[in-house]
Image (cartoon, rainbow, N blue to C red; front, top):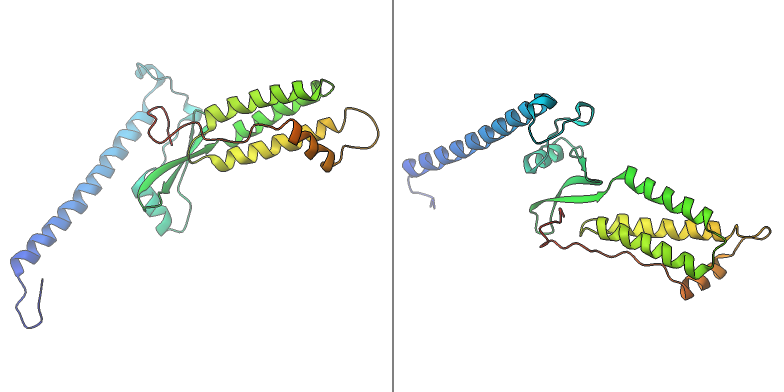
Length: 210
């Protein structure tokens, strides 16, 4: 600690400066090595990969990680993301400010899931309501079991809300004439509720991404 009137400790300041320079150099070297490794992996032909099947059209090199997040924030843009196993992986910060990876349902999978449920509701709209409820809850349970990650609750909630609207749409078309009112539909939901969204994976689960 420097006090006014005292001469600065040149040796201490020099050692501090050297440590900062060494740390900065090591970080840059690590970034360069990781980038070189990633580029080499992308440049490999499918025949050179012994245990991984590479599809050139789906293979790309992106900046992802703590350094990429800081750089994107400095440049005033969103960090890059990537899709894997039906989940979109996003660079983020935890509540304590530490780097972490959040996931959300891939948009294409989200739309495909809703389309499948809409087709089922259309085909089976004349079945008893309690049978429809059981099947829809089974479909929702399967969706939550796969996509129920701690950072994906908003997508689960949106999926649940969309399924409610789809079911109302096709129940309204069971007979010709006046459509089912929302008051009547809310009464049906009280008697035959749909399974609400829930998180099925925990942070401590080794098989969970986030």
